[in-house]
Amino acid sequence: MHTRSAHSTCLFFPLAFFISLFLSVGPSFAAGDTPTPTNPLMVLSADKQFQYAQDLFSTKDYSTASGEYKRFVYFFPKDRRVEFSMYQIGMSHFLGGHYQEAVSAFKKLTEQYFDTEYATKSYYRISDAYIKMKAFEQALIDLNNLVTITHNPDAKDEAYYRMGWIYIETASWNEARRYFNKISAKNRHKFELKKLSAALEKETAIPHKNPKLAGFLSIVPGAGYLYCGRYQDALIAFLLNGGLIYAAYESFDKGQSALGGVISFVEFGFYSGNIYGAISSAHKYNREKTGQFIQHIKENVKINLSADMKNKGVTLSLQWSF
Image 1 (cartoon, rainbow, N blue to C red):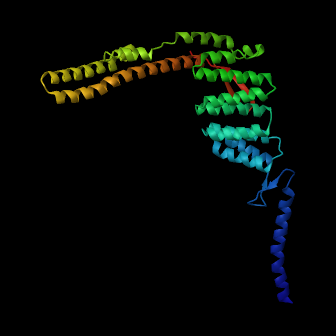
Image 2: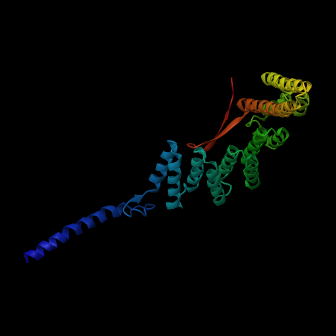
């Protein structure tokens, strides 16, 4: 009897422990809470999961934040914050510099939601990501898609504004003007179009060098570089080519035809390079001056359209340089 009692006591305490553990954990499961697959006793709260992802995002731990937003979307697919979380996944990739992944995330949102606030913002962010990747044509395509599907006139106007700036980035001045002119009258002041139009009028004053003329002038070694304002290169080209031409002449004059032929062959390479270099210098000069003009109007009249994560809106601010 004593042995049986002791055996029953040994079984009672472990059993009582597990029963009390189950009772203490069981009531904590609230509506919307889900046990995790790795630990069925650990409760996953929608609010806590969402806040954890938000905290990671606010501390710029974008890689981890992306994973936690994905976890939230997976475990709480009917939560009202799912669309915003999907947007934040895209923003985490974008701000982390993973632009192709950002495009994929934003496109997944636009496929699931139609003409909503974050679907619209996703189209803007997709175009931003493509611009970062220098895929300007694709950025324009996605903004055009937004214009086609949205019923929000303000969203259309912002898309036109963004498209105009993409054309400015590619120095397509007339196309830029065409899209700015599509913006409705009520938003023209909002986007500072009067100042922007005045700035664009100055594009005809951008300094320009003619590449063909630079090549033609290079018949005289260094003259093409001189035309492009590259004075040191002009002097080097003149002295180097002049020295080789003189050396070749002297060699032939003294009957050293083989040496003269070798020097002439070398000189031909330098002479051709002088012409090609002058043409390239003209193109480089034009790119630099155009880039400076674009940067100038960006710093003085471009409105900065940026996503405000806390207020879930779009902040418009003028950028001025002093």
